[in-house]
Image 1 (cartoon, chains in turn brown, purple):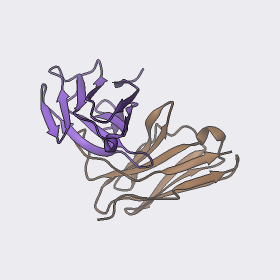
Image 2 (cartoon, one colour):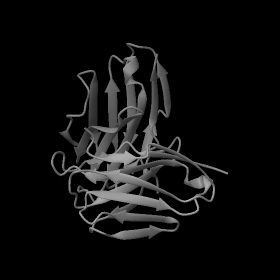
Image 3 (cartoon, rainbow over the protein chains, first blue to last red):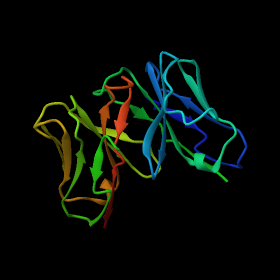
Image 4 (spheres, each protein chain N blue to C red):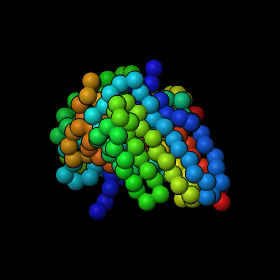
Length: 115
Length: 113
C-alpha cells in the first residue's frame, strides 16, 4: 500500500518566492498533519485537519503560512513570501483516528532551503 | 520548556555495544510512543506503551514505561549500524489539540561498524 506521498522532496528557492508543498495522505485516514522539523526546535505541529476541516492551526508561525485540504486525498502547505528562517524539513502525516495511542504515518518529507 | 526531555541528545557507539536512551517529563501520560527516524526519512512508530511499569520487547530493543507513567526508556542490546537514526518519544496532546502528538527533540544515535 502506498504511504503518505509528499512533493517536492527537495526545494531550493530564493527569499521572497512562493513555495507550495503537496501531500497525498493514506486513503481512508481521517486526520492529516503538517509538521516542521529543525535541529533547534525538533518536530513541531503546524496545523492538522480532521475530515478536511482545519482543527488547530495554532502552530502556523505567521500569516505567511497557509494550508488547505480541498478533498480527502490532497493537501497543500503554502509559504508566501518565503524567508531563510523557513528552511526546514516539512512533513505531512496522516492517521486513521485521534488519540495518543494512535499511530501517525509520516511521509518522507519536503526539504526546503530558502536562500 | 519542553514537555518531553530526551537524553542523551547525541550518542555515538561501536557495533555490539549496549545503550539506553531516556524520555522524561514532569507530567503523567496515559500512553507514550517511540518512533525511529532514519536519515532522509520520516519517523516510523516502534512501540506504544500504556501501563505503568510495562516492558515491551522488539527484537533487540526493550522499551519500559515508568511506574508513575512520567518517563520511559529504550534499551538496545548489541547495537548494529542499522540501528542508526533519531529516536523520538511522543505523547498525545490531551491538554490541547486532541488529535496531535507532541514529540521530544530526540536522541541521535550513530552506530559505527
